[in-house]
Image (cartoon, rainbow, N blue to C red; front, side, top):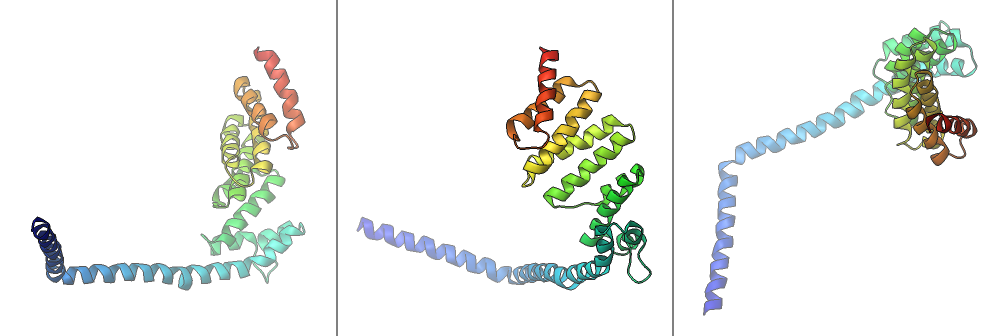
Length: 231
């Protein structure tokens, strides 16, 4: 009989739970319906924004930029910047399609053009607007900003960006290529600023983690020199 009573009590408890749930739904049916409808609308709005606004905008920007990118690849840099009268150049693409991937590529490419022309302030401005989520290109843009500051004589500011690029590179898929490049540049900047211990640590990372890097042999030489000086 004790077992029977326990079973009956359990059944009553479950029934009470269901009853309370039903009462809650009945009393809040309107609010729940509004909440569900609002959630559905949010999901539909996100999907609609992506496929009806973002994707067509990206496609239009890509179609506008292919010729400028082609000019850039063949080193027709004035045409790449200004366009040819029929197709837009990077300057107009960046202005007319702001926020798109094509505009960010335009800014990055303009950064390269102005850097190579020695117009480092302009190059920095464009690299800063090349806000890529891509692991490799974002590192290159950051590293290029560092290079430009070094060229302008602001080694301390350059070191900030070179170190940031080196740190980011070590955590991404392109680390075997980009990390030793910016570790080496940051180490050289540290040496120029008299930060020998910091430079030594960066050269050590190159020699320990990137033995196949182009910078390996030079890093090894500088490391030996710094070890002798700091011992």
